[in-house]
Amino acid sequence: MLVVLFCAAVWYGQRRTGIELPRTVTIYAFSAMDGVLQEAVLPGFQRQWQARTGERIEFITTIAGSGAITREIINKIPVELALLSSEIDALRLVERGIVSGGSWRHSPRRGVVTRSPMIILVRAGNSEGIESFEDLLREGVEIVQCDPLTSGAGEFSLLSFYAAARRRSDGAEDQALARLHELQDHIVATEPSARAALIAFTDGGRGDALITYEREWLGLDPERRSALQVVYPETTLNSEHLVIRIDKNIDPDKRDLIDALIEYLWSEEAQARFEAFGFMRSDPEAAPSPEFAEVLTLDDLGGPDEAQRRVLSHWLRQPIGTVTNPE
Image 1 (cartoon, rainbow, N blue to C red):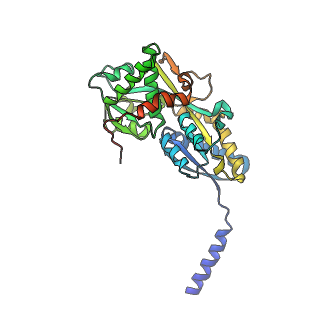
Image 2: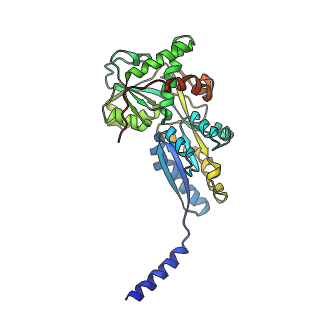
Image 3: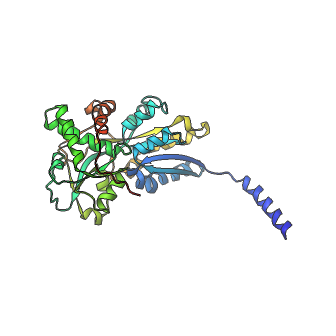
């Protein structure tokens, strides 16, 4: 019996070695992309690719804050594609020699796959009377903040507040930065990603307000949405989300597959799927909600380098109050 079992195991092992494993693509994506990638975009590409080539492919995906993803790539995790929510994070990869400078800008629409303006979420009824970023500085208002070190939403929330403050102060940078630093006194929780901050705010009941992507509001189910209210600031920023290919991690025999996947992200099918999950299309003709009076981009702040140097670096040098990350 032992001899028979041994021979069967050897035969089975030999059969297994002849099985061709599917090619895989390793993708890291910022947290707001979780549902749309797993449920719509990647399955759509799988079906399209198999129908065209007969090949079955698989994906290895990791979801986290955009800054956390960037740090993992810098730490040599063998990522092939990254979906980042901020060009500021993409430039960090350039600084470390991971990707060539501005390589994503040679892609369609400068590498922008989706967009989403920044909004303020408050509790239903808006008992604090919050109608603008400035109202977040009222006495007693408590804010849940995305961490700008690990989250693109954290970067854009601070930059949106700053942009609105500059508009109110007729472009006075010092006044805008001073108002931004006042925001720290109102933070009661700092979370590592847009999704973690949303959970802390909705399910955890923390704070009175949360600055986040409009996509997070549009993606809420009706029950959770009924407990909240959205505030459209008069001036805000449009976050622009990039696809970054990490060429040094891509084997030559996989370039055709990854090129096709990247191209698919701008296809009508994929863009419609992103839109169905609350993202704005990458098409520059796609307009944000008319509820916004003014929607700016990083270019209006002098570009990602200037936004990092003039605004975020000042914030990060300041001590942050209460920080509570989910276990």
